[in-house]
Image (cartoon, rainbow, N blue to C red; front, side, top):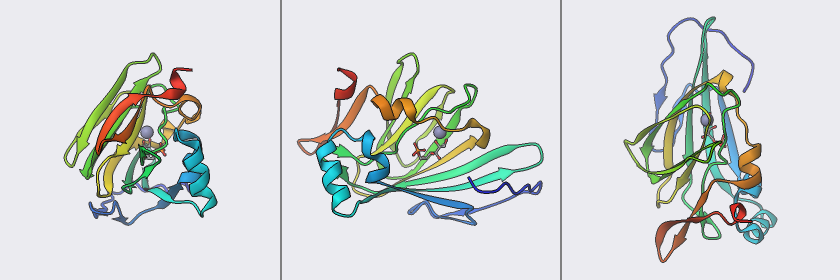
Length: 195
Ligand code: S6P
Ligand code: ZN
């Protein structure tokens, strides 16, 4: 994130639940297929999409509420509808670098799944729709998948000090992947985990 601005006064932002945009917003990050290249199973389709000019998958907006004593942050993520091969658009997914840091996710538009998996292999895929709120305990990797026809928007609340660790997810993904099969979203074993 950008430079730290300390503000001990209350801050309020206004969210557009259809886009994930909020005002004021401190930082915006976009992730394209090329940024998620190693996350998708169908590497041939990834190469084709990137060679044809890439494709936007999701937009993240952040506001870190730094005070002289705290570092709560607000994040929104807007995942566009779509697939890479049979696999639905999704976030990269990560663990928090600190082992004592949970997070709250609140889905405000769309439908999909929240995948969570602990380092010990405890795996959950929670169906998500507007209004679903999930507490992600410390040391559970988390990823959101948009299986619907509209943009999936969710709000995240976390401490900036939690940090992000992407390496293990980049190397092997979650236990299952979520793909379209016969017009429906189905969970199937992640081929990278059965090698
Ligand atoms: C931060 C929080 C979210 C994600 C965002 C994008 O802890 O979980 O703000 O950063 O949803 O996901 P990812 O996996 O690309 O960071
Ligand atoms: Zn997180």
